[in-house]
Image (tube, rainbow, N blue to C red; front, top):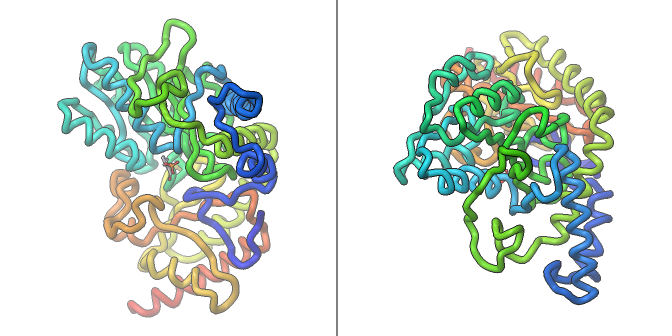
Length: 392
Ligand SMILES: Cc1ncc(COP(=O)(O)O)c(C=O)c1O
């Protein structure tokens, strides 16, 4: 799975497909092409494969199989969760709470709902990227139907206090949705222990294929959640997501979930070691600082500001094939990388525009090695030094 012609440190944008996932998908891309809804023997084979995958996704987050809805990815799962709850519970209230540092898939869905008469409160964060539970408490009203707070931030890796947020939301009779796109497959999630009502997942963030994800929608207990479908048609996925099932993608998501669950602890140990080694090396460069909480942060990311060195210029320098292998890193989220705005996550945390423009996200996975990290540290140091010399 490791490409030997690039050093890839942009694993929060996407990860390479695990060959074991591809192996399991291959038959469903070739000989086993049946429609999982067909009632003949051939179709039943595909249906069985989908059933196994659904169980594996449920096991990853300790849910039940009937609580997993397959979607085209996290963006669709997020839209289905937020619009689905908004539509189903508009009689109860039209107030939603989210956070300024959410991914654009959440923020833009909320903005859309504002244009349809819903009221959205966007919580701020402190300089470490964490929300204030008192501010959340003050914002909750009897009209609040949904609280949407991401599990792990895609730019900084900051982990929000999910259990406490869910508890507060429930005290006010609101549902709790978490965008777990950067958490699933990397950190243990138990939807019951954390009291989560809805949760989005994307396969390509943990070595599964692109274009497939899922939404967990709680069906057990008194907290059963009703959502309105976005897509209407053949009534697939219990009527919540019509459209012929993407069997190869679903099988891939299932396999990636299974591998992630079994190998989670081992992956965490090795990736954390590499991230810490990288961070230690990069912080030796003068005038650098970490963006986001150091303690409440996922183990695979570090987001670092290099004062006086423009991040686009650093990215360009690193991706140049001269002087060794090209290195892939990013500033901000891949979905908004065409924008010339500073990162909305960093500015919401109170950083200046120039601080945001000088910040780089390094995101690691099991594809990385210590040798690669050593190369990255020395190349970044060289580039930052030359950029700073240019403005002196
Ligand atoms: C936190 C977060 N939410 C949502 C998404 C969108 O995921 P997808 O590519 O599966 O639509 C991403 C992808 O970058 C993400 O990082």
